[in-house]
Amino acid sequence: MDENNLSKVKAMTFDVFGTVVDWRSSVAREIKKMGLKKGFTLDWDKFADEWRSGYQPSMNKVRTGELPWTKIDNLHRLILDEMLLRHQITNLTEEEAEYLNRAWHRLDPWPDSVEGLTLLKKDYVISTLSNGNVALLVNMAKYGGLPWDTVLSAEIARHYKPDAEAYLSTGEYLGFPIDQVMMVAAHKNDLKAAKSNGMMTAYVPRPNEHGTNTIVDYEKEDYIDIVVDDLIDLSKKMTSIK
Figure 1 (cartoon, rainbow, N blue to C red):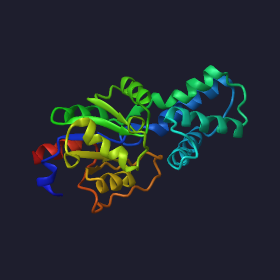
Figure 2 (tube, rainbow, N blue to C red; figure 1 turned 90 degrees about the horizontal axis):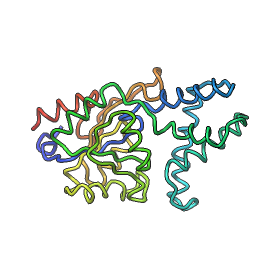
Figure 3 (cartoon, helix red, strand yellow; figure 1 turned 180 degrees about the horizontal axis):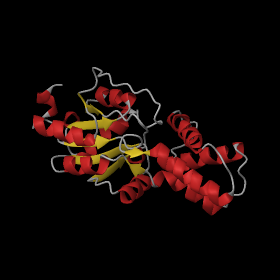
Figure 4 (tube, rainbow, N blue to C red; figure 1 turned 90 degrees about the vertical axis):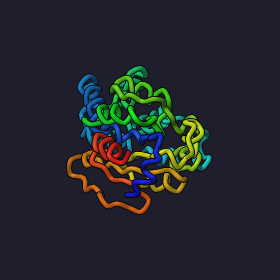
């Protein structure tokens, strides 16, 4: 941990799905509610995992030009429609399908997230840097009480992470040199890409992101500047450096 470099941080951008919010339990809850209403039964957690597993392949279609620029809400809906067919769920109205698709707007924060972000907000500009589209991120913040100063998204940069443009846009929009912006994430690939584009990095492992039996990698890599237990711990450690 290089305290001299960390002391230069002025802004923090956060991955959201998995880092700040518990997407898996939240989406599984929403699917279960719909299933009880419409009379179908599934492994709710597996359905959430299956939905999430379509996320990267669909973004890659945009990245490679197979699809034109398409926001995450619409990609989520394409994935959901395929899944509903695959699971032979045919009795949802269009309104119900769209409500279910917006489950991603209603994700619960991790227990430390609101308090941790509120503490960090006192000393840093805090923003999302998510592949989620702006409306999704704003609705999620309203739902979960997430106190962002602003919302940055792949939608604004028109590039999905890990494209360089997504990371480099943070310095441009927040008005800081890129080495004064810290990327905070629970996913090492996100941090590796952020570091390669000049950002500082904080790793926040989330042991329960994929369920309680997940093996979590706690190793510190050379592209990670600080490892923390949660967002409250990040605030404490950064305060001690300042």
